[in-house]
Image 1 (cartoon, rainbow, N blue to C red):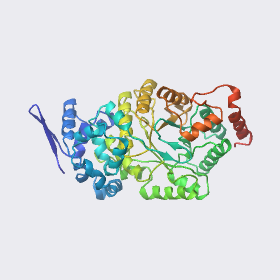
Image 2: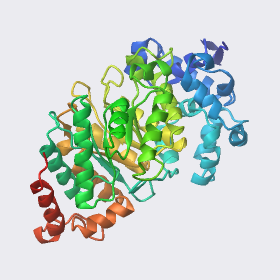
Image 3: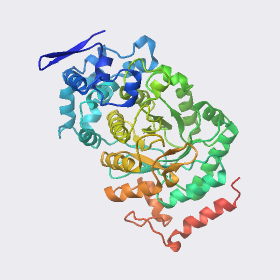
Image 4: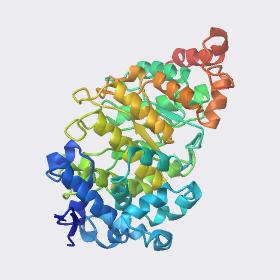
Amino acid sequence: MKSFQTTIHGKVYRFGSLADLLAKASPFRSGDALAGIAAESEEQRVAAQFCLADTPLREFTKDLLIPYEADEITRLICDAWDEAAFKPIAHLTVGEFREYLLQSTSTNVELSKISAGLFPEMLSAVSKIMRNQDLISVAGKVEVITRFRSTVGKKGHLSIRLQPNHPTDDLKAITAATVDGLLYGCGDAVIGVNPATDSVERMHDLQNLLARIIETLNIPTQSCVLGHVTNQIEVMNKSAPVDLVFQSIAGTELTNKSFGVNIALLREAQDAARGLKRGGPQVMYFETGQGSCLSANGHHGVDQQTLEARAYGLARAFNPFLVNTVVGFIGPEYLYDGKQIIRAGLEDHFCGKLMRLPMGCDVCYTNHAEADQDDMDNLLTLLGVAGCSYFMGVPGADDIMLNYQSTSFHDAQYVRQTLNLRPSPEFDLWLQKMGVCDQSGRLRTADDSLAELKSRAVHLLSAGVP
């Protein structure tokens, strides 16, 4: 195992491994401190960042943080690596790579050419020596477009996941919340429900409900019931109308094992969903979040942000329709306050976009974190400027089933109007047809303008939602 060192003003700083160097160079966060791997002082952190900046990118292809033979995520990343795509930047150090990314000549087209040559750890490394504005600037160059019934990720557009969760999976309440969200222009990324129970039968009911809503209202969007992937495979085997397959994933084999998943199981689910032929080949929806590997005791001494980037290495192999970091969901043990949550959200979005993933963000926090809705407004705005593909739309921003704070239907309107962004093109036209928005994208509130949507919604409810 190679060690690293640097000298600053005559003082020598030593780091025992590449993993140690990355951890010490990370902006402070409570999860790394809890793991006992964070820098012991700001001086040590700055020294680590200097040392990291001088580290060749090629080092990450040789000095694997988690051994190849011990981890299937490492094997996936290494086996998928495209050395030809890496060649244009193979001579750069981490610091020089930052300069390359910030150059005006490093356009979306140029960055797409090197994407397959990037190890996730390279992006984690360079993010550690970037300011927030650097992360925003570079991510904003990248356009990642995915398609199912709607098109997500085009520049000038911002999509929203409509999240009508309910603590008892009440179908009428979910339907009402869905219609409410549609009236605010939300739902073009996906209408996605987190089931309150692990019941396969209830999952089947929820899948049928969402499909019925989409079909009755003729909405150009897709649905997802965010239960465990094994339950989704079971309901697909029973011919449930599954559009997108969801699973939470992480950056190590050990952590994914604690989630009850592995690469083979995800492949099985992907094949099953594609076999239904309900949309295009992009059928996977992944959620991630810094801290999950530490929580599962599967971190191998690697910092949480680098492990998050490795989760994107796993996601990339599945050509997913949606990926999002649920950035503040795990709690203050991992991201203590608003400052840490904001930084983590920008890092995650940057790393995911550079790996050509359709990155969204659940801009959120738990009630016991040192954060509030003003912090979320800040992160929401910054990620909007950075070209984030989609956010969450939760009634009142308060998820009454998962018990955390997210972003609301109103927040979606704020970001779109402030940054002059539109919904996905297909959904935009549907909103105009239904009288929800005018041609400029502004909400219309007159009762007569919403007659078509209201008529269909009344029909939906009166036709016997269970």
